[in-house]
Amino acid sequence: MVALAVVAFAFVGLLGLHNRNLALVGRDQDLTRAVLLARQFITEMELIEQFPDTGVSSGDFANYPGFSWHREVEETSLPDVRRVTLRVVWDPRLPDACKLLYYIRDRREPEEF
Picture (tube, rainbow, N blue to C red):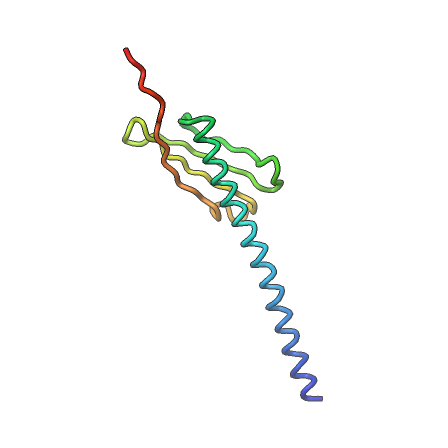
C-alpha cells in the first residue's frame, strides 16, 4: 500500500512536468515562427521599400493568424541610414518577446543636380 502511494505521488509529479514541457515546446515554436516572420518581413522591406519612410506602422501576417507586426522607423545621425525596430507579437502579454533592431542603408543612386 505504501509503495502504491509513493508511485502515485511520483506519477502525478511526472504528469505535471510533462504538461510544463509541452507548454515550453509550444512557446518555443511560436518564438521560432516569430523570428522567421521578422526576417522575412525585413527581407521584403529591403526588396520592396528599399529605404522606408520614418514613422510607425503595423499589420498582421496574412498566412499566420494571431501573429502581428509593429514597425518603427527612425532617422539616425547618418543621413543615408535609418533605424528599424520590428516587433512580432503573438501573445499580448509578451509584446517584446520577438524584437528585432535593424539598420538599413539607402542604396539608391544619389540624385544629380
